[in-house]
Length: 382
Image 1 (cartoon, helix red, strand yellow):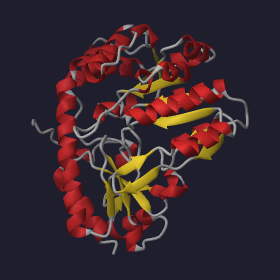
Image 2 (tube, rainbow, N blue to C red):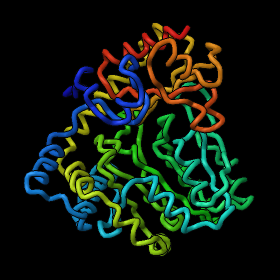
Image 3 (cartoon, rainbow, N blue to C red):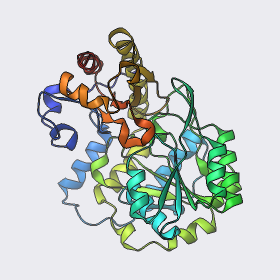
Image 4 (cartoon, one colour):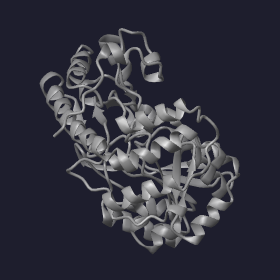
């Protein structure tokens, strides 16, 4: 393993992103999905090159982005992506909002699976939809499943769309093939659009497997549109580039309903950086995943030693972990107590849906030392 080292805390505090400017300097930020690692050198070199020639114009919709992602998808997941079916936009949330708005009528029901990425709730309402929450099922720490019976009932009751988070944020689960096959069958049977947010897929750990939704079956290709970005895996959220992938004429017809402005919002820097990420920065990504797996172990051991009552739902993807603080009796929003007493900022579990009461999400994409310091501060909330 080639360890990827996080930047020192003093250097991190010079960053001007929301992670490092939302709280006073005595607070250790371990909330927003931004990694503390330096970006891949290949990406840094490309950005410097663009600036050096004042290449700061509008993005030209180059085919190279689709080719780069298609090459990675084939090598990583055996997914044969047509580069022509890769269409860029600004970010996954914007793309999902616009796709949903084009697909549903005001008041149509949209199925979410809490606890889930908080913007899913807001974008559903923005698109005119009514949220139908079908919470995930769990049989123990780190063991999560889609409630397929509940999803079927929601589809039968008239839901028009399903927002699939795979790998799932915040629990870090990569859904098994059998579950995705059944989901696709149900969506086809009830004519439900599946918007598959697969943004965390390149960060699946070695003890899990990611299966792209559009590879599942003809039913998945007819009902689904995949959305992703390099922003999470390569730490590029500020560069405003994401894309959707289609694999059927029906899906392409849905895309055709979108306003042209959705595509024009793609960031020029983001497009170039994403191309270089998936084509040239795979060694950095491999080091990143190995480092995250090591950090996951550090987090597990630190919590067991200092806050043993807390229940860690150990993720199998990404760098975000879901922690159940209910055994400690810290109320519905334990992150408030942790912030006040320990001066460490976590994500509020309630924002992930009603099933998030008593939980908080922690970001462990940092140094082992800061993970241990963060857990030490959490323990001060007793």
